[in-house]
Image 1 (cartoon, rainbow, N blue to C red):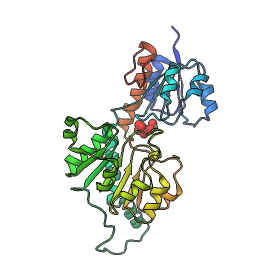
Image 2: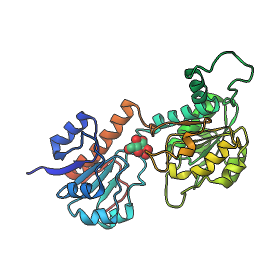
Image 3: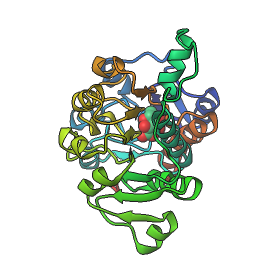
Length: 323
Ligand code: 8YV
């Protein structure tokens, strides 16, 4: 039987391409060119599956223009690039890559929390630019992490992994807010207390955003929420850039209304709001939350498993819709 054809939209580990090549005719993009949408659609003609990485928008217009497409496998847990109802209506399976990145991404949340609270980027820039001439009693004094209150907005798998690090590793009191409250067992496991969103912003010393990005929670953190924060508090975003109103955040940081922010994701990424890059009290990283070699390999292999499983045996490991 002739092999089905698939498209791999971005560069990926060569061994994953090799695996896919055992099952499919593979058109790949190892040059990692960002294809304009019309070119992406043109390359999808005749393809039964596509391996995406979170940046490729799959919507009603795209699925209508690609009648052979049966599955889109995202190498990301977030799938705000997928219009899942439109895909379901067109009979296209959507899959994401959950679980395999949970601990690595939680590590990154904590990395940004600590770097922000202890002013690591700012003090390193000071040293590198030759400004360090003497010790001073209040030089780069930041906020304590141990024993402080950690506020987590979005208590899914990654949120709970961040909570465990805070509660068990740093003796933090953990408060959280989520669309739905955790079961008592899960709350006990992560030692976290459910509070309203307002209370979270008031009580927390360090806030971490880990919720999925949807139309409903666009700018869920804006001027009103930031105004509730303590002047010594920090906020970290490892979810999606659109969760925060970046202009409001930059204004609060510039005015010293909060201590700092740690951001791995940005609304217009890879472009970053110049109001943020102009500030010292913000730690900025280029969407590297899941970026360790074993985790990225596991994510890529899970996306490949989904393509292989679905197109050869009608079985995907981590489907987002049922057809
Ligand atoms: C991905 C992410 O690396 O999984 C996600 O949702 O944000 C990252 O881990 C990124 O989306 C590219 O696929």
